[in-house]
Length: 402
Ligand code: EZ4
Ligand code: CO
Image (tube, rainbow, N blue to C red; front, side, top):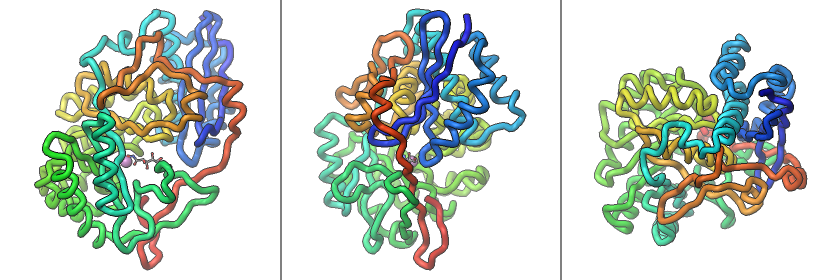
């Protein structure tokens, strides 16, 4: 059995996506996602110019060998561009293997550990009242877990809060927008939001918050302590995590659970965080961390240390990653929660999929493979549009973490 062709498809149905479609002489094809928000064309070039030529003629069933061929074999290891490209190929190969076996992917991984996958939605508002109303609407739509973000008085734009009534989409401009940040105002305001969310939604709803890397470890410890009365499901990315040992300070100071890792691309980014039990949930995801083959290693390491998965699932991960993630979530023993940020209607038609949402949970469906495909002729109607994430500056102009 041979790989006969690999198409690298860049399209923009509402936002940009990079998709690898791996074709074989066995009839089955597989689809993988290589989208890296704001850096899409770098992954597409890496795939087209350096990966595809090396894979034509190889046996698509040798997933493990191909993973190491692309990782060790390149000599240059890790990094978001490389690991997103490897993920695109890896997920397509798992899709092919599951299709050839006539099984949904979760069966190939080991079968289901649960009946359905708990997901959390994004609740947000320009102020606390709007954010609470939005969370109540999400609760009515069935969500049992809700991330709360709101505008901060004195700051024109705040992470996670849409403007002009549009859906929240951070990559919103052909050149990076500039946002302003003030840590003091943020630390003052966020506990007030969660006091209202907890009293408005009652004790059952899981509440989450994304700090988006903006605090120092000591400030993160302060926020974690201030949020303890509201029993968060997690506080996400409280500080940048390149320095993993710095999380000891946060961990020692607060019992608020911590989730980290949507920017990670390998097990080495979270090895210490996991082995020292400095976090509760790992946010590394299939699309950015080398696919199913590598994410499985991260999940197994996490399981040894009481860390559970909490896959990043924003709209910059394509429906292909969402489908693969839901199969993984249904199987993985140490599952925590899955982020669910629904894609636009245009995205959904370009990527027909078997997964479904009902009553606060998602299921991947029973289609062979991961259950997500790409409609190539429709995709061609949505050409790439340059779109960047914003940058963040302190009020004196210092470039800060976004
Ligand atoms: O900013 O996916 O938890 N979710 C997030 C996302 C990220 C975007 C970056 O591409 O933090 O909104
Ligand atoms: Co996040």
